[in-house]
Length: 450
Ligand SMILES: Cc1ncc(COP(=O)(O)O)c(C=O)c1O
Image 1 (cartoon, rainbow, N blue to C red):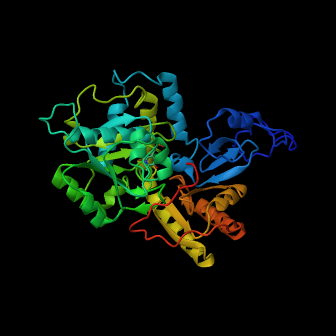
Image 2 (cartoon, rainbow, N blue to C red):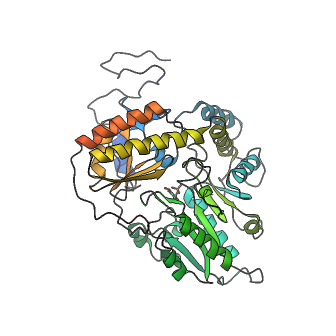
Image 3 (cartoon, rainbow, N blue to C red):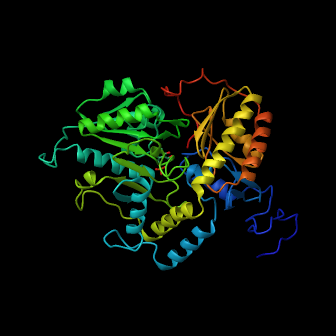
């Protein structure tokens, strides 16, 4: 390890931490100015560079440490540089990063088996991202909407897709078509035809919009971007009942809430029934890009070679890493940790809500937590960052916490202490609209780019 040099040049280093890439300096950083000048301006980013992470912390180029309660928006579920993940990535990178989906390799089969065991579903297709997996799920819905007697051309008899108000499913044409937020959709119209939005958790609205022309109902089991709203049991059961009765598919988007985030392997496992398709991505390969469509034998029976595919999806490096991710959750009993730490967080935040009147509601499951404010959330995110804490704000007024599954009791305490100081010191800006009815969530304009 390199020795720590003059304190003037380099910020002092905690034992075991790599050396910061650059000294704190007033000189303009060309890496930031290059980003400003040459990137498409799709994100509003703070003017700092992250350089590395260890466990539940990340570090910027000046050596400042941040407690990471955003976890790469639910991706870094094992934190940063987890030794088991580092070992697998190193080993596999030296063996083979990519072959081709024209050939078998050692990890797709075992990973598909593990995902089938975790989900209770039967078959898996690997993609590169959440959006891409959603896209594939929509294609499967269209495919299954054709009676087997139908020619594989021409419009399907069942062409409609029911999606949810307040939803987020990604950025491709299919995914934005089923995403309700207008600012994500309208600039790209015309979108996929046949999509209609149902008020989330409103059984009567679902029943009114459902008929024999529906090919699929798609919902996030817990809406993430929409502000952490869980599907109710009554709504799930009715969606399951109607789709089964009319030969349509129930698709659960578990990209943000699945793979352990709630303290269950899949968020839908609190319900008595399964979806026909579950879509996962974010944490699956511990930070490497990998998504997956999980489905039943009945859906798989409609698929034949050539109908769908991908160049990169499910290569040996990402699949080996994903297998290690799932085994680590099992071996380290992380589902228990998620439940225990999640309960501590909810309890601590509920106590804060008594001290700060602008904390309107705290809700969530496991380590997916939303804090509804009656004032604009963005200044709290900025103040938290100043104080060495990464959090996020969604839907303007909901602070979102997505800490790694390995978070410790002491780190939860540190978070609560830091968060209290953020709440106490942040200037309060714009007031939020009247409290939402969380059973039927009205759409609200989003502000922050994700
Ligand atoms: C619920 C949900 N679905 C889909 C997506 C899109 O996934 P990706 O960004 O990997 O394309 C996201 C991403 O935030 C998500 O939260």
